[in-house]
Structure formats: C-alpha cells, structure tokens
Length: 380
Image (cartoon, rainbow, N blue to C red; front, side, top):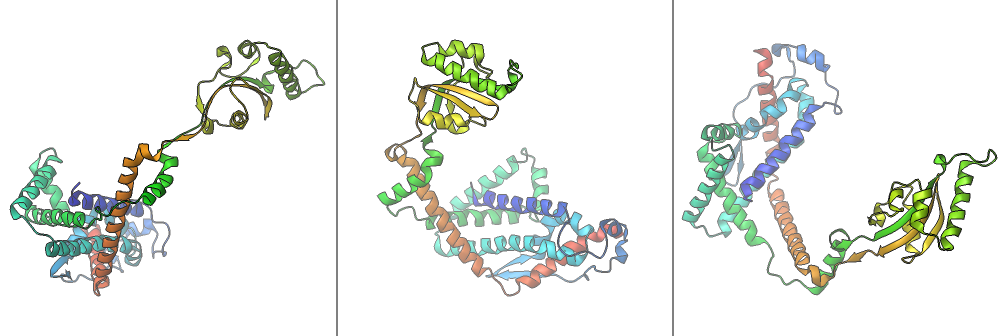
C-alpha cells in the first residue's frame, strides 16, 4: 500500500473520530445557551462569533500549510457541532482533533525533506509511479473523472497538487523502507522469546474431549415420594445407575432410557468438544476428564439441578506446534516488530521537530475560520 493510501486511512480515522465526537455534545464547559435556544438565535445575534481576519499560513522548512488546507476538508464534519455551540465550547472540543491533523501534515513535510536529502531519485520512474496512482484514484470512483475531481476539491486539492503530493508520498515511502532494520541477524534467543509470546494464540491446539453423558435433570423427574425432593431423587437414581454401569450394563442404553440431555438418542455420545468451550453447567466435566483415562466412568457429578455420569471416550491434551514447524512465521513477526519500532522512532523524531512556535496561533486561526464558515448559513 502506498503512503498516500496510508495517509488517506489516517485522515478517514480523524474524520470518523470527529463525526463521533460531534454527534453528541455531553461534557466540557457549559454553553451560554441550550441547543434549542442556540439553534433559534439568528446569525447576527451570535455574540461569541470571532471577527473575520486575513490569511494565515504555517511555514515548515521552506514549505507552507495554508489555513484552507486545514479548514476546507473538515468543514462538513465540524459544522453540526459548531452550529449548536458557543465559540469557546467549540474551541475546547475541536482543538485536539485539529492539532492531530496538523501534526500529521507537518510530519509528512519533514519526512519528505529527509527523503529528498537522503534518497536518490529516478525522475522518470517517479513520474510513472505517480501516473499509476492517479489512474488508481480515478478507478476508485468507477473511472468517473468528474467524480474523482470533485473528491479532490473537497480535500482542498486539484490535479496538480494531487500529483505533487503523490510524489512526496512515494519518495517518503521509499525512504522509510530504506530506514527499516531488515539486515541485522535474528538470534536464536529472539526466535525462542518471540515463539513463546506467540504460541498460545497462534500455534496451539486446544484440549479436545469425546465422552458419553447421562444428564439427569432434577426438575424433569416425576415426584415418586412426597417426602423426597426431586434433587434427592435425582442423586439416588444417579447412584443406582453408576452401580449398574460398574456391573457391566451398557452406558448407551442407560443414557437413552434415563438421560435428559440433548444427545440421549445417540446413547449420550457428545461430538468432540474443546474442554475450555464447555459452558455451565457442563464446565465441571472438563475437570473430571483431567482425572480419567479413556474408558473410565466418573459420577455422580453434581452441578446445580443436574446430576451427571460421564464416560470418557477420547482425550487429546492441549498441544503446540514446535518452533521448527513455525520458524518462518516467527521470523516474520520479529521483522514486523523491528519495522514497527523503527517507524515509531522516526515518527517521534518528526513529531518533536514539528513543535513549531506559532502552531497555537495557526490552530486558533483555523478554528475561528471553521466556526465562522459553519455558522454563515444561519444568517443567510
């Protein structure tokens, strides 16, 4: 995936976050008006509207970020909240989201500058790569050039700026790849440690059980003795069945006759199940199975209103694939960790460089512009 698609994903995440954030207005400082009162106030009477001001750009290493780049792509997402809140409340809730978008833009510029400085560029190959991305973008809109162009406008771009941005993206991605530590040898200790971290989730086969079950449910028994509860009757029946089983009677036949379980017509034979997947009240059977060998019987086993008699048919303990079997996957995970760490270090370095002295003033200007544009239609 190209770095442009990566940036597009990040932008979509921020947009979704804004949509969620501004779909509700709980929390934060109290506004001057209720939402109903605020919606009814004409634009000319909005006392807290910021005054209109001139243009403002943020200089980053010889390049600039304009207020329009920060405002136009996000107007529709900010507008619902901006129209029903005071300016002070709007600033309080929206500032953090706009700051995160700005940091991404500044970091991208700084990354591109490092890429230009440290990466050799084949201009012809770069132009071909840009053209492929342009075609892919148009195809994503059903090959409708007009729709694609309209989407660019909503992003505050035209085809020229889109192509220039693509160049930056491709070159920056190449630079990031060149910085990833893929060549350092992977030690055996790293393999073992990473394997141990992964094995429970990725390389394990859970314990499996296959058993027959006589499930006596006390509530389903007819009362034979007024002086005896159904649960006491169930325990007595279970004890009698255990004695008959130990005397050699067939488990399946007794299950078909006396069990209330859902597998009674199959002689109480359950399909193989993972021990850890047994839900209450049947979870007690997993512990009993640990103590049994295939062919042995356990019971009576009390579980609330149920009395169980279990015959273990098969048991497969939890097992793991060996390191030798999964070494390729483990190596891939180590390389992924190394790349992730390298990218995070690079991003941290860029974020530190992005701490510009006039960033706060620029953010304030953008917030004022978003708020004013969002509320213009109220007074029209």
